[in-house]
Amino acid sequence: MTTFSTCGKQFFAMGVTVIGVTSLVFGAFPGKKSNLDISPNATKDRLKTDLYYLAAPEREGRGPLTNGLEKAGDYIATRFKELGLKPLGKDGSYFQPFTVSGVVMSGPSSIEFKGPDGKTNSILVESGKKSNDAALVALSAEGKINGALTFAGYGITMGKEGTYDDYQGINADKKIVMILRDAPRAGRKDDGFETPNRRRSLSSLTEKIGNAQKHNAAGVIFVNDKANAGETDPLIDFSYLATNRFGAKIPVFMVSRKLANSLLQSSGLGDLAQKEESIDKDLKPQSADLKGVTVTMEAKLKRGNVIPVRNVIGVLEGSGALADEAVVVGAHYDHVGSGGFGSMGAGRVAAIHQGADDNGSGTTSMLELAKRYASEKDRVGRKIIFMAFSAEELGLFGSVHYCKEPLYPLEKTAAMVNLDMVGRLRPDKESKKDRMLIQGSGTSEGFESLLDRINKSYEFTTVRQKSGFGPSDHSSFASKKIPVLFLWTDVHDDYHRPTDTPDRINYDGMEKIIRFASEVIDEFSTTKEKPKFIEVKTAKQSGTRTSGPKLGFRPGYAEDDKGVEVEGVSEGEAAAKAGIKGGDRIVKIDGKEIKNLEVYMEAMQGKKVGQTIKVGILRQGKAMELDVKLE
Image (cartoon, rainbow, N blue to C red; front, side, top):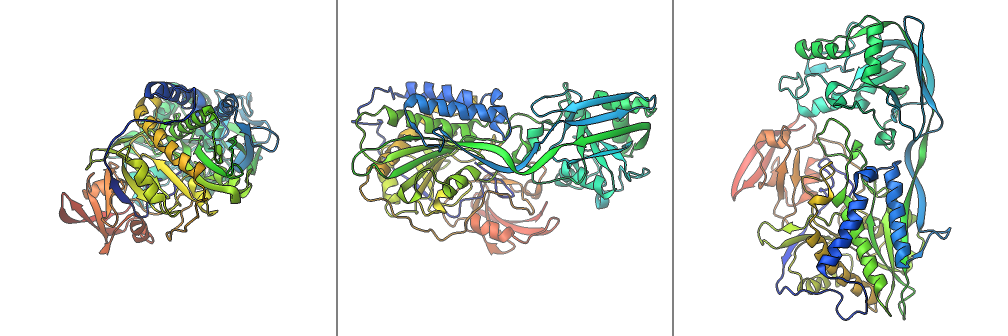
């Protein structure tokens, strides 16, 4: 699921209803003719087979421009073909290709160093080929430049946080600056920064490039600091930042610590590690020119809608009077690769985000549903279009593209069921029964009663949102006035982190949700009257992040109009510093009553970083007011 707010994707519930029901009954696909073994154990075996493939490290986090994303798409298409689903693509394939905004290499790039002895070292950087010595950073500008090389420490100018300035004492004008990643005194409380957020901001690659540009540098060369280097000194993979919307005005490369160290030593500046130690010890810059060293950099890039991605679509034909209409069952199969802009992790070294729950779980569940329906004999009802969307994490682009250029008429599409993050089913804190979130329950008359009726056999405590708008692919269909239901199991501590792995999935919970979803799809595919869309009056949300101050907490989903539940806080950030704790409920912001997440977001609009606000909370039924300095 994609992020779009200062606290991540969890800020989408605009008012919810918590409902618990009784009378648990086991069963699935009763009365249907099928040779497929749908027992819980057989189902879980199939789920594990698919999920362990899709969320394997070899899939590279299914990020844009990764071979792993291509392999995942091929895998899904192969599954569709094995099941006998028909391709819906214009070229007779299971793919719907499109492009998203970003940057790709348009040709071989290069970086060449000339030392004081006149010897040169030329390194070619090509798309799809990894070098241990140099890499082109996707934030780079296109062009060829030449200039003297200057070591500029961490490339940081602290400004009001302190007097530390890596550009003090050097002239970077028309020179190429060599910059360490991160910031001085990593992990120390006396790092010299006012707040953790400010440290992260000044440590970012984009901030450092911007600072270099302010000093009129001709180019930037990044080098791993010791912590980012670890044991292997990995260079930044091009795809890691290929969709970042920041574009430098100067060429940007990265080189290995070994190469950087040899350049420093050849110019008489000594050892790179000693430079870091000296900065950490005294918090004083060690910047200096590398005398006699010049660099030529050529970056060949192309920006725009140039990143190729693919939706994967298979159709199970219907029969009878409703066969000309369709029900869409969808899930996005992309994730955030090695992190980049989409990571919520605190790790210093880029790491594969396997995305087992987000959204390997939804994709795997969609495949299981396809297997079940494809195995039915003499099925009567609407056709079912199974869709695996791409580029959801970048802003719902896969579903947006389909709805803009549908491969089956939207006016003949009766409803859409979306599965995203269904792998972490867990008990509700109060009812102790399995808790499932459902969005879109108000997008057609009768959805609420349908959910109540089906749920009598499952005993889910359901947290419902009537609106069909939110940061996952159902939103694209709701915007086209198609009734939607979105099933998921809430955010968790592994969300958008490298720890979202297949071994942490609740496969019993997935199997239960699949049975529930199949009953919903049964209704959608066989009900004589096509559901009529109802526009729920609430704010539509996009798939992009918003800027602004952060409290640094993870909200939960509670009853309507009773505030915003705090499931957890981020250590070192504003909420934790002010004393807000998990289990608290935010009920006021500067005197404004906070009923739900939508009101909370409205109350936070216009707030500024550094501003102190009064946050009213309920803690175990006791009202409290805390001063919170925004970061």
